[in-house]
Amino acid sequence: ALLAGAVTAYGAAAAWEDVMVPALHAVGRTWESSGDLCVEVEHLLSWHVSTALRRAPGSERRGPGSPVLLACVPAERHTLPLEALAAGLAERGLPLRMFGAAVPAEALDAA
Image 1 (cartoon, rainbow, N blue to C red):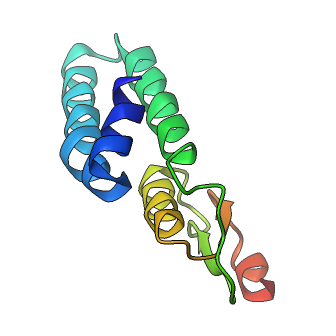
Image 2 (image 1 turned 120 degrees about the horizontal axis):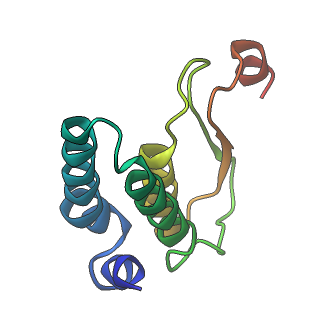
């Protein structure tokens, strides 16, 4: 609820930069210093950040025109920054297609 409220109050980009990234960094620092004792906290926070971004106001609207294609490079498995970008584009009514993590180069080329 707090993450969704931040997105609603500040917009996706500001919520990402000012709330979500600092929280993720704080959890990441704790995880690194604890010897993997709180990895579940990082995964839980990441899931809820992703959920809040996907449910951002405007995420259901898609404007006319060719969509922006969003995908991670083949070896990249972290999608949160791309999800934040998708939420920001959706807020502006821009059409997009999200391919997600680790998309093979051939698939990107075909898209």
